[in-house]
View 1 (cartoon, helix red, strand yellow):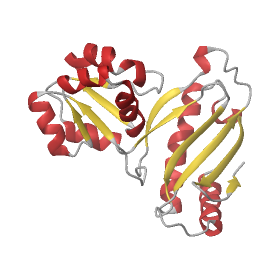
View 2 (view 1 turned 180 degrees about the vertical axis):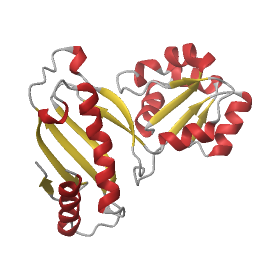
View 3 (view 1 turned 135 degrees about the vertical axis):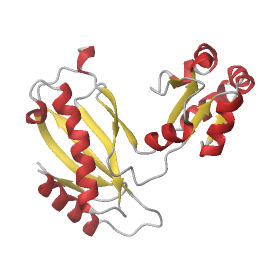
View 4 (view 1 turned 90 degrees about the vertical axis):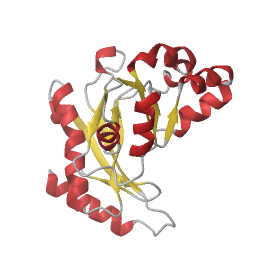
Length: 212
């Protein structure tokens, strides 16, 4: 499978027109025999891509004191304290803007009740509720991991679409990332990858190539 995926990636890259930005590479998977009306079949996992996403990831860190300082020092894209959380609670439009602008949210565990109260109504529906972490956590490690993480979901259709890299990565790196996403099927589906109906590779604005 890996070799076939590499060949598909190569074809997609060759056929994709030059753009004035670096395009993402996505994998799109349709699944057989999956009843999405059953909650247990609605996948929602985070996958660590072995070669990274190849694109920037925006991460908001909700913390106070030393943890907030360390998060900012480690390169968090946004650091939100308790006072700012309360301000977002009074400004729904701004809260929605924040929710839409960041890929991941992380929160100091003792601030989670406040997060739930003021940002929960906008983060919850977007499946972006923060991961709670202790005040003693190392933000550099957490940020580093999240920058190589993608969310793999099945919601109301038996389809998965996930970023697996960018066009400036090698075919082998992207294929390895695709394999990491396929592992989700092996962990969650009764027949694993045998339930794949079709698998496609595509760029952000370019052609689609069917792998299987």
